[in-house]
Image (cartoon, rainbow, N blue to C red; front, side, top):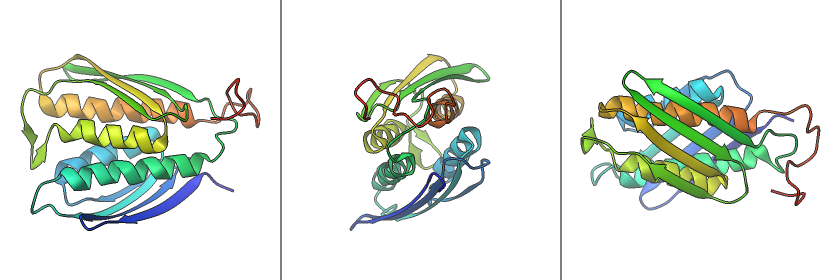
Length: 196
């Protein structure tokens, strides 16, 4: 059985459906109603080598906050569901992504505990129609609902677009490493506790 999940979450503010295959080839079908977020989630999908479909409708007449956060929630839930008991995975992942003058590091532990440590500063408040402060909200929701520890640390960068893209690409590569099967682990859960 493949490591897949399909989840729909409907609230008074948003309607989000995510279909995920952790062992895909980087195929993305993303429709969030937020152009820049579509661009970032497509990059994440490609570099994580997931197959990912996201359909989201939200209260964008207010702002992009609810839609962005709820996509993070549902994508996180899908990752957790697709991983199941987390048997045989590498568990840890680390990546550094340069994007022109920007450089961002992401470190992941699929620990069973949701935690985001965010050390990123954007020089402008918006990219397209998206508030840059919403990137932190997305990654916090993702980490909490996937139940993983995620550190995103900016080492360099001035251009806001480049910094944001480096955040998504670094996280994607770290996720790709962390969810990868580790043949030396076999079918074991990679924890001294025996569960994650």
